Length: 150
Picture 1 (cartoon, rainbow, N blue to C red):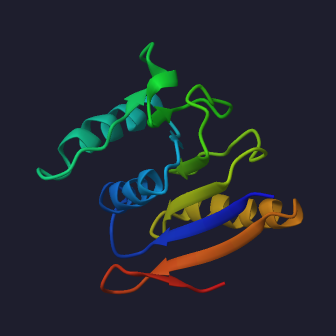
Picture 2 (picture 1 turned 180 degrees about the vertical axis):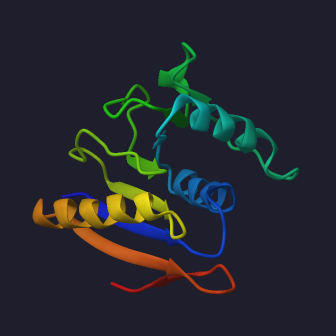
């Protein structure tokens, strides 16, 4: 079964939290797909990942390009996109996958100040748990660190 992590953003925005989590995934040798809820969000994250920090580089591309299979990190709006043969699927802004079968890990990142994202995360928690996945819930502290709550 897939390890499913729910990251409840309470102190930072997705743009602040996602790059660090992507870096950690790449450090483990994992290939990643990041599923966004819209093409506009995908494109905004694409631009952000090129400029989020001067001293770092996250190799990535989008499913709007023909080189998706070559990308260590692939940004997509397609719930079934697996062109880069990912080990990990990140789901942001309420995105929902077709399936989590075949992934080592899935990560739901959701904004704690957005009621719709909270509702989606609660619903997905129930679905993933009922499917037999190992689910954990992580919440940010005031300092922005992650603490396992469930």
